[in-house]
Image 1 (cartoon, rainbow, N blue to C red):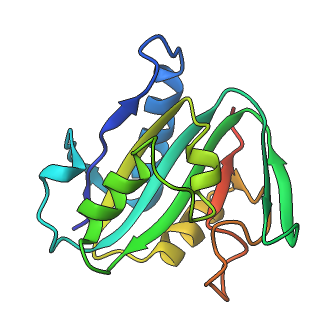
Image 2 (tube, helix red, strand yellow; image 1 turned 135 degrees about the vertical axis):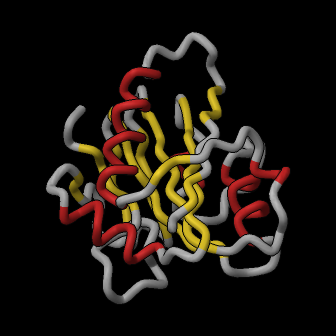
Length: 169
């Protein structure tokens, strides 16, 4: 059984993309074969809870990224994106999701360069899952593309990226 925790965290209460976020939530849950269970705040979960997670991001404006002195650069156009990550280290899903949802964090991971500009973020935690399996299943649907190869997956040798664009926008 896969547990999905998905708080919708909106930094702009007037953001109009709620319908689109519901559509992608339903699509992802169907693609992954999981039933959803929503949790309002990742900080309320046990730090021992480990697994993978998806961040569903809405961008209203283009976001340019340049990493490692231009070794990886590109732009993400407005739309809906999904980032997959693992949280098997200290603090587990609680720590990782709390960090990703913090707008004042220091930029460290590839995904930080985009989450800092997102109009909204929804976090879906999948205890016991692996990020590469989630990416493979989402790509198999044909509804996602890889906007910037290698982005969000610098430590992965099997995935084209851990950052996908939802193509039904």
